[in-house]
Amino acid sequence: MKVITIRRVDLQFDADQITSGDAEQQADQAIDVINLTLQNRPPGLHAQLIIHRDEIEIETESDHI
Image: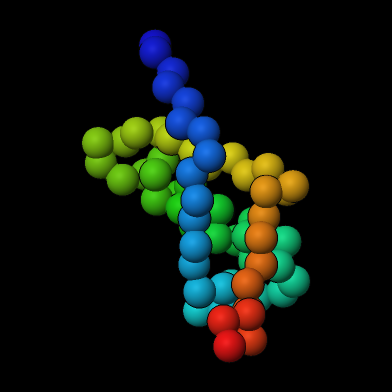
């Protein structure tokens, strides 16, 4: 089996749509949803995203005003 690792992929999501809790919990929940999809969708990539806590950035609407 060949394993390919892609580093430094940015993921942005609307944190309040399907996740709750503090930013770390919301990141974990989003990754869980994505990983379930990657692992179960045909053709079955069995891929997973792995997050590095020191690379999580949080933006709020007020950051853009």
